[in-house]
Length: 320
Image (cartoon, rainbow, N blue to C red):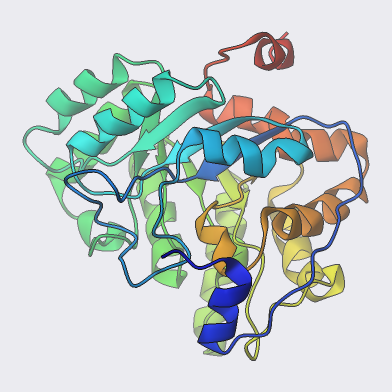
């Protein structure tokens, strides 16, 4: 039996949250960070686990459509949530049936002997836009930077015009992204979930972290997803923009209006709040900076970062 969010919060001892209605706007949205999975498959899924009653249910494009439809979401990038090789194909097969999916970020390990073969296999489908690598599936980007096979594989990825999404940033990962960008300067790298990261507590490490971010901000091929914005504090999730504004300001001041992307992290985001609440905070923040800036954040920048594939007339109009 699946639990709705309010029941889940009650059982977990968390304070339930009230919905916040975002300001109405006609801006179309490309959500650059959603996950698709189906625990009812015979083979199951590596994530989420059965213990996660909120997430452990079929999560497919039709459900995403229903969730995101009130907010003028017209396309989405699916980001891997499985290290199983054939799940790259499973996502592509699922995406083929619903044109709301305009791209996928798969899971391949650049240092593996079959990386180039598998990359060529999946990139034949134009929806395959790159891979994800970072603090996920017991991997370490930092540890791989001294591995010549890994760097060679990333160069193949870059030469193919595909991107690298990171996973779950910390100070070590940010430093590794900078070093990887030095080694493969043509690579487009997209840093996800930066608003959720807590900077190092040690003053010298914090300075180094901010120095790394400032250097990354000078590189036009580095993008940041303003995703996983909501945070839990003392068993509650604040829904006042003023709580999040200092961190959003820091990211915006560094990377500017041309390098930030909207990503909901749906359905994982439901551990913090509803899609309405996720959208409400960032809409208020970016609309306050003007229509032009909000359009860049919600859809225009995603075109330059991912070169995603329009699949219907509404999406194609964004590219004209």
